[in-house]
Image 1 (tube, one colour):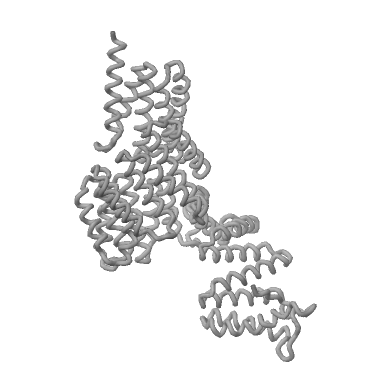
Image 2 (cartoon, helix red, strand yellow):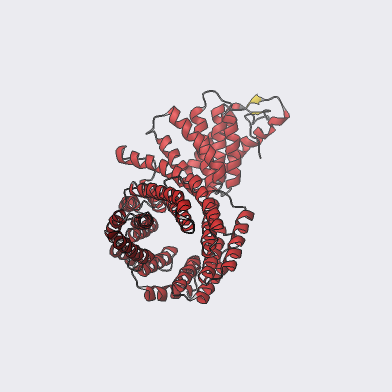
Length: 545
């Protein structure tokens, strides 16, 4: 790394302070005029002198601020010329120099912000985040919360946390920006369209569909760039589909597919795939299959990007039809099209292969496949939240397989491992964490069924308490439509507990509440609810005698 210093030996005819200052200001002017190559050669004349600093005790060539301007000009030219690594190296040098100056808070925070953004642009988010966090804290200290620099860095911190998979922290920072956009000045220093779109994606991933729809609509309202507008429209359509507004979602999908400028683009194929997913939800499975098969037959690099997810979808449909060999063929194709370094795609393809084996009753083969995935994940260079969550998902799959083998002890162990990971990575009240709490209680209830009533009572009472707490947590999320299946499942399980405890009135009350929840007719819960009703009738008849 070049060690630029403002101390150096004066060169005859060139080394004066005035001469070097003029060089620096000339290079900065050339940068503003867009002549980056000439700017680079100009500022290099000064920087070559600065490199001599190791040879002498030194005389100050230029003032501190001029030296900083030279470094900024050099970075600007290198970025324009595509030399990002050089730009990052010099920015690190600049930060080290700025830290030696008195009253440096504003300049230091500005440098850390820019360096953090540069590192993030190269996907080095781990190195970027500490710099951005320190820049944000410093700027909050120096300025008020509505200052331009504070909002800019808040955005950078949110985006970096999002890229690192820390959605909770990202949502926190995006929420700050959304509040400022609502109550603050109209001339925001950050792009409100990108903020709303990014926040919408986070809300959607977090299961907050109503908030996602609102954010996407806000983003769409201000979007002018055609490509960004198309991306936001697709995001909104997907959110509406998840919220059960099929007609509105389908209208947006059709609008995108009829836009000539989008034909054969990545957005075009993503839209077709998501439209097919909605068709499947609507029961139009054959139409969806026909479209998906046409896409996989398309020779296009853009179509190639979605083929993996298509093969997984077709494989899952085959599993639903009990065509396990066909499903395995599709999942193997998904494995084949995945990039060798795409840990996520490879793991999901193998996971689906394992679950197909489970459906076929080949539990040992399912276990060995899932163990292979865990080994792949542990040997991967990829680390962090996303890999931890993927590992938890595989543990959950192993819990399902061992449950199928009637090995409840092993099933519980893997379910507990998964739950611990979800709690640490997502938090206690995240919907995914809550679902895993519920799943673990079901395993405990099933284990209790094989015990004597006196032994089972304490286990069932504890499970009942956890299920009630989980139900209350879902209700407190204030999104009855999104979490209706979770609520129905929990109330069904509590209904079975009430039957076991010999409480027909409690069980009947829960059945009535479940009946008020709109469920897809083909959902597996429907059968469980029917079984619960039969058990309640049996208990009522028994109590009536």
